[in-house]
Length: 145
Image (cartoon, rainbow, N blue to C red):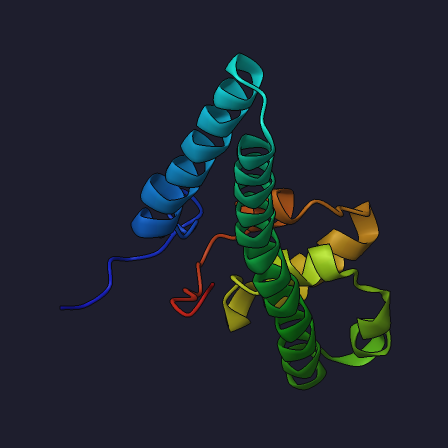
């Protein structure tokens, strides 16, 4: 089955088991452990709370680290793409793009990339969502984390 057409409106990736099951379960156990610790304080309940807190932090940081690595890879990919796609003065300014700008530009088609890149630098647009919203011909990315 082909992937649906990707756009600014639907490009965010939600992983149902992570976002709607795992995260709420961990949060529920954390809240439950706090309630039980407050009701009847004990060493066992303190350790349950600490374990639930540690699990929540581990789940958060596992996702944050994966997204951080993804951002670094996107930065590298887009710099290489810009190297081949941009001409003249813009090619010399590839180093001026921030990671946020490059993340937004990754969805721009090759046909609109140079014009959009010039506008992003000229106007100093630094928010990735704002850059993505400016893309007219969307280049999908189905391998996001």
